[in-house]
Amino acid sequence: MRVLVVDDERRLARTLQVGLGAEGFAVDLAHDGTDGLWLARENPYDAIVLDLMLPGINGYQVCRTLREEGNWTPILMLTAKDGEWDQVEGLDTGADDYLTKPFSFPVLVARLRAVARRGAKERPTALEIGDLVVDTAARRVRRGDVEIALTAREFAVLAFLARHRGDVVSKRQILDSVWDGDFEGDPNIVEVYVRHLRNKVDRPFGREAIETLRGAGYRLASDGG
Image (tube, rainbow, N blue to C red; front, side, top):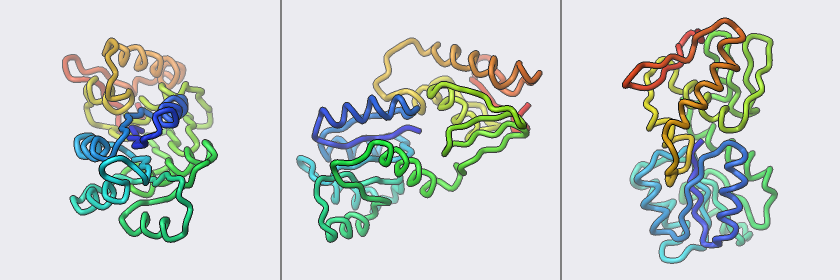
């Protein structure tokens, strides 16, 4: 999942970026409401972690503006304010959930996954492609009854292919979804991860589900190969 974190506490925002990255998320950061609103308008995020008290435009205004514009990206409000009316206002402006500081990181991750699932019906918890099952909630993959161990980044690439099964996706689309927006490394990193996935989810089972279309990109066969 690609996530936007909007928080003016730079150390906390960076900590969330590192922690969520270790969980397989691609994370972009904004430190004020204006930048957060611009990024949310310009990029297809799976979820937004939005602080309430922000410089310039506060979290309420960012959330309300996105909803009025028809942007229904799931939003998890994150704030130090714990009054019940603050929670009511946050939810009434269109937030999907609300978490107060200080918070438990595992709880934040679980709630983030939960709001993303509720807000995107096209991405069910378990994606079944033939006998290949990609469980995005439990972050587990199996072929038939065989469990397959993947790294967080390998899982993120496979989950993206699974959500777009049957469709050709470009290397750039994978980079934009799985890596951070400011990624400046070698785009051929995608090829490396696709090779790893083939060695784990295809070849041991005699399958060729992950296809390469020269000059176009990659495709995960809709029948799982």
